[in-house]
Image 1 (tube, rainbow, N blue to C red):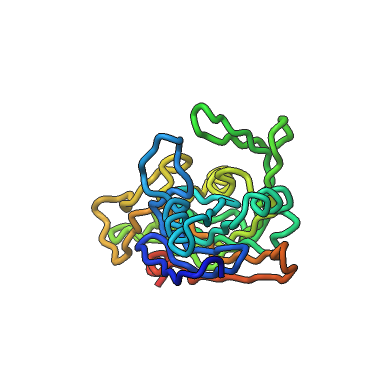
Image 2: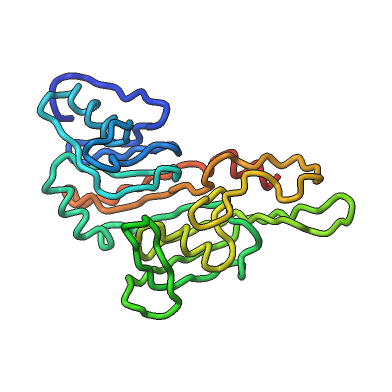
Length: 253
């Protein structure tokens, strides 16, 4: 490891998963930004936490973000210890990543048990919104493969008619566009549960008279669960995996 000092990372929003002389892999909790929204922001971020951590190892150490997760998305993140490695990994990210799997709770029942969503995405940076088109409109092509793991249709106790349903979905990315999963699930009518930007953001069951043992998580239900990539320095394949969040699984008992 770099530097002579031994340092440990203790933070409720960030768990150290792996580190070597070149890379650091962490699991980020929801509610934590990966990087600041602007240079004047004083909000705590994953990169600020890690920068303080590596500088406890040695004052000259630094850290550089390779990719990002949305504030409300939890899961695995990779950081490089040098700017040169950061730039290399960003340039060849698609070639280096051999597996990238997310899990989400989606509203409703997916169109198929498994399938592929392909659209062209255009980001409006002024409004921080990504638009999806089923045909090539000049945007960036985005490809998401999905598989439904579980479904739960909730019945109205009086009529016994299903008036809400949820799907636990595993998602594999061929591309890594901004908000890709959130936009793609919304495009097929099954937005990520708790998504206020592309979905309904409902944390409550739609029928207030309905009695249910299901606890709707108070969060965006999206988690970066598996990440596998080639370490460009050692050329070894690194595989990291985290459990499906318990609050997701509780909805499907």
